[in-house]
Image 1: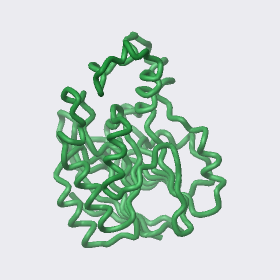
Image 2: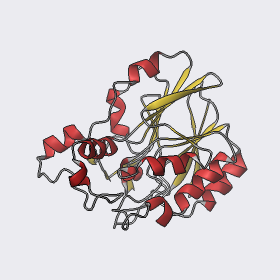
Image 3: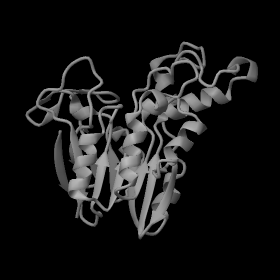
Image 4: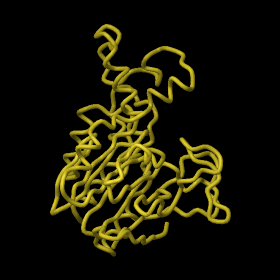
Length: 265
């Protein structure tokens, strides 16, 4: 794991963490204690989003996730958005995340010392929530978590799934028009096209650096495909994409170390 420093004019000194996927959080904590950022932004995928075991929360079976948030909140104000691996988390789970001292930004924003910090929830989370809202109590049953990832029980085309997986972005204009320096936590880098130009800083992850990197380019990223454009570094002068803190793919990472990102002006 490496510490990477990026410069964005006007940005506060912050740490950007993404894609922990329940790995050992302690090296990350040591980095944060070494550099002491003014705030910490966690852009989702702190867990591995497999189907929960019975009705036991994945936050209970994957203890590094909450431990990371608690460690972060003890160092600096910490803000969290939800990535695609958080697709099944319910209100109790979100409350447990907040109990660590971190602020969960679930399609909302908060003002902090002249900053306007928002969290754009992954469209995969929203697709799951919409499917749940369409189920009757009988279909939902007594279980806390549904059995099976296909909550709607319907086979759909790739185009239909893509449309259903778009985030809820209706609030972004109000967010962007609020006075202050805007920081948006958006797990998916490809969502940038939906984000108003008034947002000065976008923090993203998800691409895992493109998995294999050759000549400064990633080879593959979910949501972008082969030779993705947004994998690691600064794009459009305002988007910082983290290569992430873990590897969940069967293939190893090549020339692509995990990283703790620091942004400063």
